[in-house]
Length: 84
Image 1 (tube, rainbow, N blue to C red):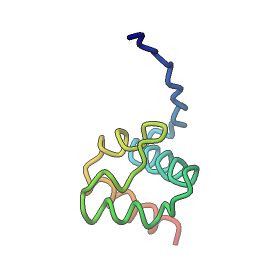
Image 2: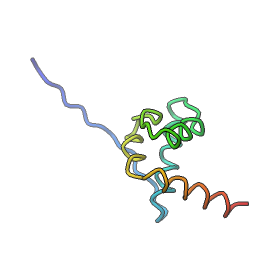
Image 3: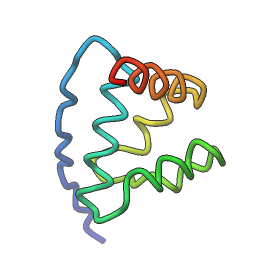
Image 4: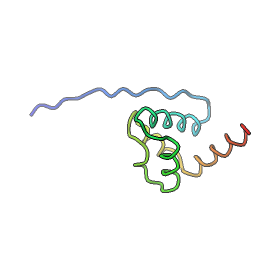
């Protein structure tokens, strides 16, 4: 039986110096690219902690798991308050 090894292409994350922000934006774009509603999927993940709410496309799921859910909430509140 012959095994095939395919090279996976990982798109780089644009770095702003804020890891939580960078990962959230990357995951948001990955969810959009796969046709999901990113807001609904991210809320589902934050509430439940179940990583299956996040697509594995472009390693988005493994990236979001680098962050604690409280870090995600802190970033969302910070961003909201800074922009309102």
